[in-house]
Length: 208
Image 1 (cartoon, rainbow, N blue to C red):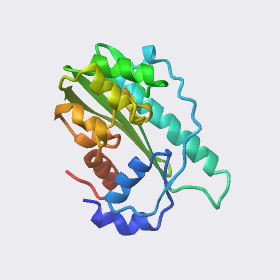
Image 2 (image 1 turned 90 degrees about the vertical axis):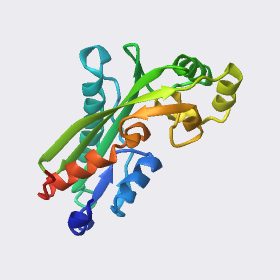
Image 3 (image 1 turned 180 degrees about the horizontal axis):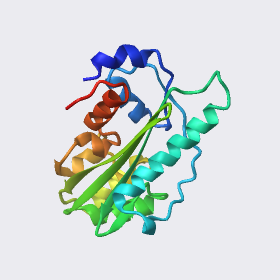
Image 4 (image 1 turned 30 degrees about the vertical axis):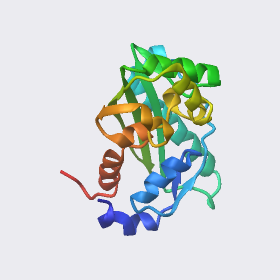
């Protein structure tokens, strides 16, 4: 989908405001081989009570992008042309679930999700010079049922501690997913179609 603009992007310094090799691989799968990882130092301390779920993840992604852009722009050798940032959150019953800090918390969250439907939100921000695009995608995920022993066995792998909601759909956590409604890549952490459309628009190749 990005083929008409890949030549332009190849001449740019593209930075992903993240330390996530998963998101880097997703962007590379679009044909953008020159994307660099730069973990953001943005303090993710926004007050959830002041935002909708959609706005919360979008504003967190924006904070990541602005911090990385401002920091790297202090030196011409590292100044980026394009900065991409994303933030993902799992929600259910009006509650937000980020990355669990302990195995005990991971078990608690996963036990709540089993046999029910939750919604995953991923906010994305792209900054290209003075141009900025911000959007949020959501996806419904239905978990099947699992026993406490099965949940604990998954927690013991260590995978949940690095994932919003305590699971990775592209990893072992995908075994709990019975069905989804929406873009699978929104759950992974980077909605590919919307990202592609946004990049095309930024580079003046408009998709109707």
